[in-house]
Image (cartoon, rainbow, N blue to C red; front, top):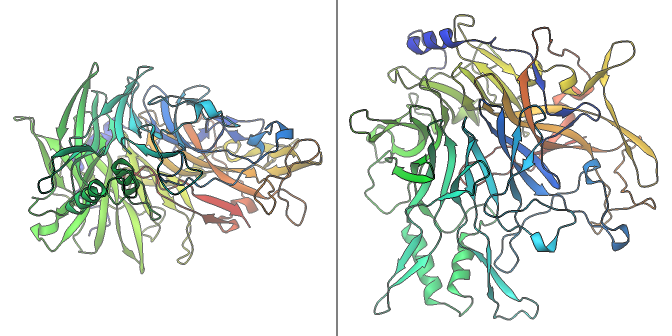
Length: 623
């Protein structure tokens, strides 16, 4: 694989980018959704723990996802009145079971320029999370926003609402079984209008065994809308069939109906994620595009990267789309047409000008035959695709960000040298690219081989006349000092802002503010970026039974270290960055809080099925 820029690579594209280039490759940025009084990020909706910025359009409209309802154990005497913004509650584990009510834990929000305050937006009947939880408005629908175009058309995925069946079993306390009609359905939403579901081709399974009467059984199927262009063309993926083994599971549920559980409950149990995050029901998944036109949806399936000749499960996903209708994503493929070399690789689909049909194109990531998988996340109007591949680097499997010129597919893909003069072992992923050739994503920031590595959002400028070799920057190095949690003292020197909180015994405590950008997910044509930042918050104190410790003043106690200072954790928040004024300067202040070794990372987990956010439940705690 060629890692350095091939001089013949994308000369046309580089020329186009040079002409279009209207901003400095690495401007100074400021976080514009920050409260300068407390140095908190306005980055999630009320009564949720985490916030994630997913996409931004050219009209400074953004969409995001809030995750993790704040649930604190309080006594009736406290009336549930606790300022939950001042502390961090341990996140409650969501258990998926047909024996328990289904509790939603993911909520959609929008955020509009100037104030950029996250505003809850209902999808599929959801209501804003409450604290204490209102029994009349408990949500069972999980919702996700993934994209927004310049006309405000939003796309994402949702579950159906909870349903119940009367329980008939050995338990004396259980009243109902709990299930859903489907676990993942893509949707499109215009303004305040109701969402329109994007139905997958496969939602029903036909049961026929021996002389038994044929039954059509609803299993829900899967679909997701991951991106939308300015012409209302939506990219995503959908289920087209089910695996043979999954059919056997459903057959068993039908054959044993009511022996241990009704068939709907048996099927639901097989669809809930197991302890490893996977469902026992496996669908054939194909990339899709849906044309949205005044409420009318026209679907088109994208071709798989191989010819199906057996009953194995194969998948493809559309994940990004440009205004020409070209789609970026990934597909199963036989490399070199060798059926012994099946891989899940980056791909793009282009529309034939004469027939209007889509053509599959493989991104050649395997010149050295050592890449295990790859994925393409986005493609701009100049045909530049961005993504990542996975391979061994210095003895460890790492993801590496790459870009590829689809207009000149005979040229190799390019892996930028990130912070060094050669390829490093820092894992990275490119998530979005605008028409100015600016790429955003995330990159690891330490070289420790045995420990989890912290991440930072990056901004990369493709090669142009000003930067012939491109320019790769850690977004945290481009921030103003205010945006990193500093303030100027009376002498004009920069120091960490100290936030004051009141403990359960009335004592005033302080902790130092800190904001770190850990991923960048979307960038518009003006250079506005949305993503995720970590913000430092103090941690509440819990007793041995997991109950919050409350003082006589009705306020919670905080965990304290040996010096009597609050122990702090870092919580994810949506972050919005815009280029600062021409006189702004990037902050060069360094203190002990900037040391990447000063924290550890805990609990990374995946998000929203196949289309994943790498940092959900990603936490770090001060030593």
